Length: 135
Image (tube, rainbow, N blue to C red):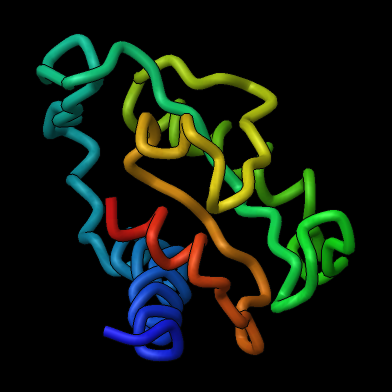
């Protein structure tokens, strides 16, 4: 899979997630007032990790890493804080409040199963970034 195809897959997979999740929540039928609320919080579920960390990807859009594109931070840090607060409220799973900003070549990136790429429409991945994502 070439870099362009991989970029397309990542963007298609990540872009609609917040919209779909919000739409699904709005479409859920409300329980009658007399029915007990059903809630499955983190204490009821078994997770691989004991906390969640929101990771935003900082990218250079084809240039060198030291010349970072400002598009990656278009809604930073507001969106990160909002997502983290809502995620913790809905799941009960403790969240790292500030989240993290990482590059795709960061050696620790594989420790985080969820990453967020903002404004990635013209993202041009380097060979090193593609290789890192395939690990």
